[in-house]
Amino acid sequence: MEDLNDNKPFIEATTFWDFPKQSYGKPPKGNWRFNGVTPAGVIYNLLKRYTKEGDLIVDPMCGSGTTIDVCKEENRKVIGYDVFPTRSDIIQNDSRKIPLKDNSVDMVFIDSPYGNNIHYSDNPNCIGKISCESEEFYQELEKVSIEIKRILKKDKVVAWVIGDHWRSNSGFIPVGIKIYQMLEKHFIPLDIICLARRNQTSNTPLWKQRAIKNNFYLRGFKYLFIMRKE
Image (cartoon, rainbow, N blue to C red):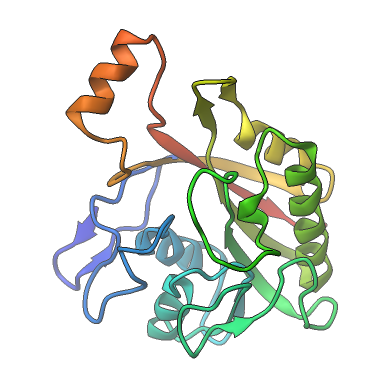
């Protein structure tokens, strides 16, 4: 939901978050056309809950730069990395090795690939080129989580967005549950948020008919795992 008085999202009070629009206010935050773009309201809520002005926020997989745009508007310091930068203020870097000092960051936000279901980039090192049916996918994302833990200050928060999969040849793949179990090895869970999925390519009458006819479910939500470094 959006506060019409200042064109900013409300601070969410429940574990169900639904943002009808990808961005809010002016100028836009990120690029709504980008594959897998994060709703700006998600980042806004996390900043208001877990950070203060002047804090340093890092997004290791910055995509179209939504995190950067929200942080700048909310007077947070921000560094955005991506293996395939889409704009000049995103630093090219592989998230498995983040060039920052230990215990130097106040919050990390990451909306990682959910597998190789969509085309994220042309970089051969992109984790999004690995199938979520492969154990390698989870091993590589664990390397990212270890780096996040290293750079986070004590008691600070990582917020990780991830979704599940359903594929016609293999059925349901609980990607989110596997990532949660991996993160729990390195962080203390604070909460799990359900993010309503909007504007995905499967959100059409044709796909809804296929889901009913072939007895499967379209993905209606993503997970937002909020965890704290000990």
